[in-house]
Length: 417
Ligand code: C5P
Image (cartoon, rainbow, N blue to C red; front, side):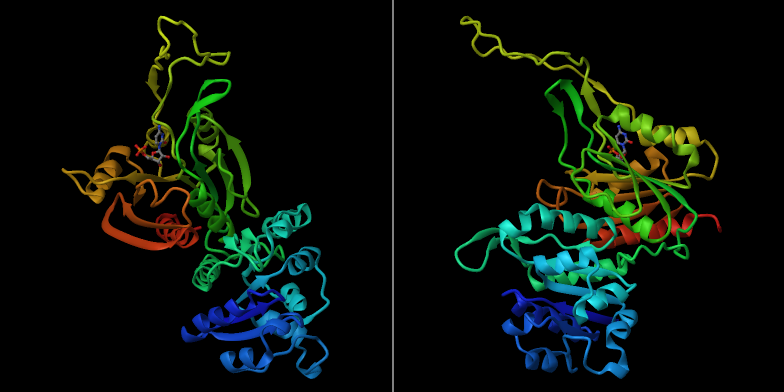
């Protein structure tokens, strides 16, 4: 792969040398494009020796080679690490005042920016708006780590370790992530397909301030929606209480409870070619919703008095979609199963049983523990299919890579367009 590694002027530039090594040792052809300020931190000989190529920072050298256009056009992936607040601002507004920003404007491949700066700069509304603009265009902006910064400061803004940037960059390349130039993927493998993805976790209201919820972050579901859009699908994301950003090009409808999610998905199911039920839907909800906040009582005779909450079953939305579909081949329905093994059965045995019980076409099974799946960036899954004994194992890998595997499987089930 032809990778452009942009480096901007921050102390974390030294970590980009290690990132460069990770790429070159895998055989990628890397062109380093530092800014002038990056060279104040790590000099040209380091980049030239590690990449095996000369570097330049401006658009006034090698004019006959037209580097300000060629480097971006030829790239398969552009990664900028570290990306300073200044670079984010220039990229968001489309400035082209050095070679790196010219590359960002001419590239049509996935672009991944790994910011590093002080917490105050990262939290500043200007930077927040620039990151939102870039993400809305489809540029991948890696979340910085929290930790020791230059000087005595600690907090969010630290450049992630090279291994994480490397993994997220390759995941974006694998998913066919966007350059942010707005080119639609009309030739993608899911072009013309209408897709509904549910994501996040439902909240079952008890009173105006309380609910029963779950730990689902929505990361996997949003990644499923993101990859579908990047592959050309028309995607509606039904997002239940997720704080994840809405992927570029995706129509997002917010829902709260399981009943709201049921209404949102069943009313649209007839328009869909594929429905992916990645949301964690509560199996139970409080039987009674209390209009006013439930108060503590202050009875000295019974100081520990507490109410009992009665629960009722929620509808199984997935099973309902399968039943409504009847014998029609469409939509293809994909379920998710968060499973734990027990003394009697393995995670996979539970998964096979669930696939048979639910009747969906594909079941994505992951093994969960409090710290292993929810809210994490990585996941390991087993993808089971109703009409096949094949079991595809994916991961541990970035949730975008997992999403790519799920869409690869679904792609084999779709009727020819
Ligand atoms: O039965 P279980 O909750 O493990 O099944 C998980 C799958 O079923 C997920 O795809 C989830 O979105 C869906 N589900 C549902 N309605 C429920 C519970 C789960 O659609 N009430």
